[in-house]
Image 1 (cartoon, rainbow, N blue to C red):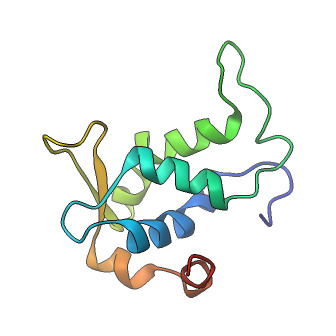
Image 2 (tube, helix red, strand yellow):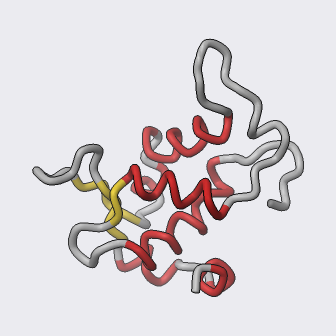
Length: 112
């Protein structure tokens, strides 16, 4: 990551879009739990990201990833829609046309 201090929500948008494009189903999207796991695999956490949250078992990076969903960041920017279906436990993200066209080449290449 370029940001040496801490990963921010905005830092996750491009990799999230690339992951949804690569691993998501055209209609069902990519489940939130899968997106979170895959983001952790491709993001290089900073030392601050790995600090545990007070009173919790997870770290700061986990919180930032959760915030991406709870703040509906991808939806607010028109990049994806949040979808809940019977087979989905936590829902999924489906890319909008804008989201599909916004997938950054650099992240798409990293995921090949």
